[in-house]
Image (tube, rainbow, N blue to C red; front, side, top):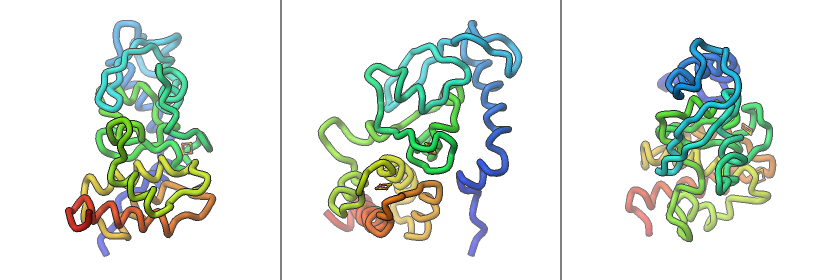
Length: 204
Ligand code: FES
Ligand code: FES
């Protein structure tokens, strides 16, 4: 079997702290005139423009603010579909897509999202409708308490949008950074399989 790429979890184990530091330097430098030059010397707030669910959002953030914090507490209206659970890169409840790739929003600085397209669970389908993955989760009863659900939906969406013919092993790998304390895994993977069939046009 081909060697697997790093999962989000293995990446965080090895280099999460370093990555966060690097993100402060590079993103802040493009954040605008209020940013103090030089990495790791920022104070106060900087004005940024984020692209969230296809819409530009201008706001002021502290350099230390995480994307999760901004989504849940700084936007108006707040986007609380992205869940805060562990806040330390261990559970995946805060998973969003950034330029199509699953990211822990709790481990991503808001400044690191400048210039990227951020998608949250609220942006997967027009208001009142469900995306194929959301629809399949509902039909396959793939949720109990629901705290993990948005994170799984985002990880599976990222996987299937990249490859609607992803195998179950590939879907499981895409979800390797997501934990469900209620144990809904069989339903989650059944939902992913159904969504994949629909996205391939094999099922209505
Ligand atoms: S809240 Fe981000 S990984 Fe748990
Ligand atoms: S449904 Fe409760 S943690 Fe997954």
